[in-house]
Image (cartoon, rainbow, N blue to C red; front, top):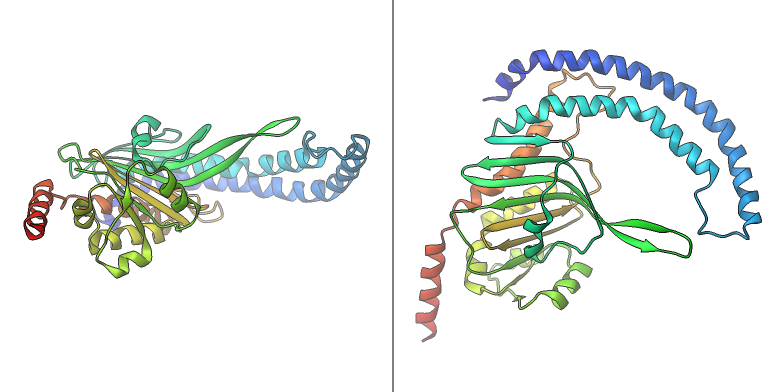
Length: 326
């Protein structure tokens, strides 16, 4: 279905969402107008009270959140609640329709990829808390796929409290080519920082891949236990696909793993994906819909390249290398 056809078929839903948008936008603007003087008046006053409370507690930095922080946080949540209501309604109506343009997909606002499927990849950071949103699951060109935004957090403790720190936030994509299976385990790393050091110490038998493409070496570090398969997998077209995906999602760091019959991609990003345009923009504006469609399409484009992976050709390449060595 073309973009124009999709917009035409979605006209009724978009017009209903526009009515909701106007209603929520009016409430949002009123709340924002009320909140500014409230914040300007009560914020400094509560900040002064916080100062004296901290002084009485001997300036204990591990104490509970101050009154001013709680007040401003609550005020912000109250003001922005209509925006979140509109975004949720929009996504529940439009995202399932967009996903089904590409294949047999279901969309769950708060679903998640099971940790048990990602753990064998060796790239999932250790964590204590796992949150997710915008979970898609289905099949595209006979390849199983799940993707969603995830937030992995680690528990930290101080003298008087326990709190959580985000150690990975971004997009997770899990592909499962059930009819094909990788011979080895290969990891790509675009961070070249502490994650690379982590791989070096915990790679469980994976060694630096001997890649022949100097352009690839500029973009990724690769680790594998099957040098032949790694060179076959990581061809220039695959690198371009991964690079495009990384750039499309405003990535900050990126790691990927080929293992068993799966490929897991983690793209660290502060950007909130699969979101409609701001509440000030009409729901009927086509750009918001088409932007989300493009985001989904970029994820699925990886499968187009993986579909070229043929284990038999890898075995043939391994045989040729063994013959040349002997």
